[in-house]
Every structure is written in structure tokens, then in C-alpha cells.
Length: 122
Image (tube, rainbow, N blue to C red; front, side, top):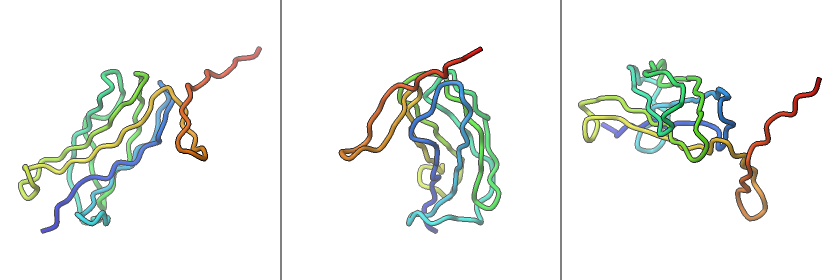
């Protein structure tokens, strides 16, 4: 049986307090989608103030959730599912984003700057 893990896709950078869509996909050792994967996984974040569902249910090997990060800085979203057939008894995956910073690609790599709050006019 091929090892499975979760590929977690979220934006490189997000403003604090703004919900973002996160896609989680079950993948095999080669990184190929596993549409037969089912079940429920647990979500956690390094952001103690993040708003996220405690669990997510996979349909055809994929799940989509909305997450709101609140703490500025580098934050990680992790996914874990217990599975007796997986190494160490669980299937895991994670991704990291920059909260409160904007990332643009420049000629020499990423350019990071703080998000500017919207200007309110009356």
C-alpha cells in the first residue's frame, strides 16, 4: 500500500481577520490524488486565535474549508487523520502562510510587505 499524506493549499499570505478558502487533498507517495480516500480529519493551527473547523470530512479524496487567521506572522495549518495502515498510525499534512503580510514575486524572489488597511471614505 502506498503511503498517504495530505496536500494543503492555502494562500502564501493573508490579511488577519479575513476568511480564506483552504483545499486539502489526500495524495499518495508520488503526490498523485487519491480520490478513493474518505473519512474525517482534525485541523489545528499554530495561530491560537484562528477560526477553523475542528474537523473536516473528505469526499472523493478532497475537502474544502474556510479558515480565518488572526495572529500576525508565520502560521501553519495542520491536518491529521488516524489510520492504522499509515506509518506512525496517522496521515498528516500542513501548509504555512504569512498573516498580516503581503507577498509578491520579484525578480530575485518573494517580496514581503505589511498589508495596508483599507482606507475608509465618507
